[in-house]
Image 1 (spheres, rainbow, N blue to C red):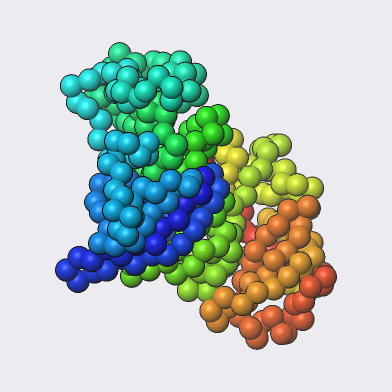
Image 2 (image 1 turned 90 degrees about the horizontal axis):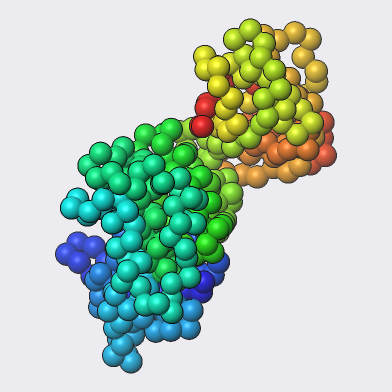
Length: 351
C-alpha cells in the first residue's frame, strides 16, 4: 500500500492540514482525542471532502481539487471498522458477514468466507442475532464484514477503545491473524501507544491537525518515555516453565523471570515499566526482589529529563530509565556491565 495525502480541511475552530506519504501493510495513526485522526480517516474513506489538495492511493487519485476528481466512497474499495461495531441489527451474524461480500464485484472476491470465519472463530456465532453478542464478539463480526468486502485498504478507527483490556488483547490477535492471512493493508488509528506498538510497523503521530512525525512505534515509545506517567513500557513474552509458591517462572530468552500472580493460568504477555527496573553497578549482596539480571548496556538515549538505558539480557532487550545524575554515578555507557533488579510484583498481565 502506498498512500499520499496532501489536503486541507477547515472547521470552525479547527483545521486539518496534512502532507505525507506512507507505504506498508501495517501503518498506525497515533494522537490524543481531538488531534485530527478521525477527520483524516473520514477524508480518506470519502465520507467527507477536503477543501483542497489530493489523495492518491496506489497510484490512483481518490481526490484532487486541481483535477476535479472525487471518487465516491463505494468505489474506493476502502472498508472501515469503527469504535462501535455498527452491525445491522435486523441481520444475523452470517447476514452481517456476507453483506459486503454480496455487494462486491465477482472479480474482486478473493477472500473465501469459510476461511475467514475459521480465522476469526465465528462458526459458533453465525446464526445468532447481533444483540446476543459480547463487545468482543461484535468487533470480530465487524472486522469479518469489513474484510469480506474485499477492500484494498482497511481503516480501523479506535476499534478497541470500547473494550476492556482482556478483550482488547484477544481482538488484537484476531486483527493481526486476519491481516497476515489475507494480506489486506490497514491503517490502525488509536490514542493508545500499546495498541499502536502491537498492531503497526510504522506510525504517523498527529496533533493539532498536523502530522507531528513519522517514525516506528518503538522509536515513538522511546521519545515519549520522559514525559509519560508510566515511562517506557517493556512488552515481554515468556514461556511458563514452573510454578513456585505464589509465583510463576517464565523462560525469557536465556534468562528466567519470576512473576507474582494470583492466576493459575499461563500468561505469555506482560508489560513492565522502565521505572520499575533498579540498576546496580555491582552485584548486590542481598535483595528481596526475586529478579536479579546480569545485563550489558547496549545504548543510552535522552527522553525529556530522563536517560533511557537499553539493556541486553539473555538474548533479549530491556529498557530502563534513570535520571542523568544516576547515569553518571553508575558510569552507564555502551558495553558496560550492570545489574537490573525487578520485583516479581512489577509485571502487569496483558493476556
